[in-house]
Amino acid sequence: MASGDTLLLFHAYMNEPTSGSYATLDHHNQHVVLDFDQDDEEYAVFAGIMPQNYSGTTGVTVYIHWLTSVTTGDVDWDVYWELLGDDEQSLDSDGFATANGVDDCAPGSSAYELVIDSIAFTDGADMDSVQAGDGFRLKIRRDAGSDTATADAMLRFIEVRET
Image 1 (cartoon, rainbow, N blue to C red):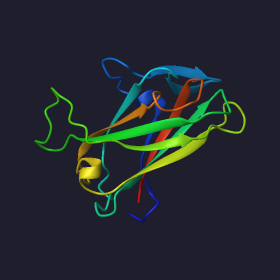
Image 2 (cartoon, one colour):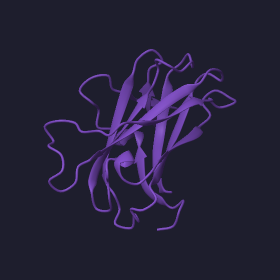
Image 3 (tube, rainbow, N blue to C red):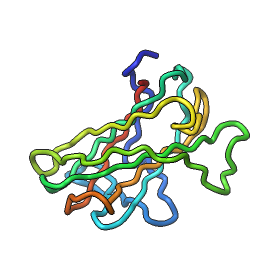
Image 4 (cartoon, helix red, strand yellow):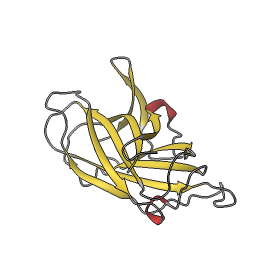
C-alpha cells in the first residue's frame, strides 16, 4: 500500500451509537449525516477490520468530512482507536487509546458546504496498536466544550488513509 492510499471508508449510517451522548442520525437534503450538537460532547463509533494491505509501519491519517449551517466559528474533533484483535479486548468494556484531535476547523465559506479536516496517527500505541487484519473501533467526538461554531456539526464520511 502506498502512502495516501485509502484503507477504509465509513458513512454516517455505519455509526454504532454509544449508550449515551451519541450523535444522532439525520438527513440533510437526502444526504445521511450524523448531527453533533453545538452544546454537548457527543460521539460516534465505527467498527472495522484493518485491511491486509496496511503496511503497519507509518500510521494512518483520518479524514473527517463534515458540514454545518454556519460560516463562522470553528469545530474541534477528537478521534480514538480501540484494538479488537485476537484475544485483545473484552467486548464487555471499552479500551480506547488516548485521542488525537484537530482544533479550530473552519466551516465552509457557504452554509452546508462539505469541509474535510484530518488527524494523523503514528503506527503503534497512537492507534492502539491496530495492525493489518485486526478488528477495531474508531470513535469520533465533537469537542463542543472548546469550539465556537453555534450550530450542529454534521458528519458525512470518515476516510482512513495510509500515511
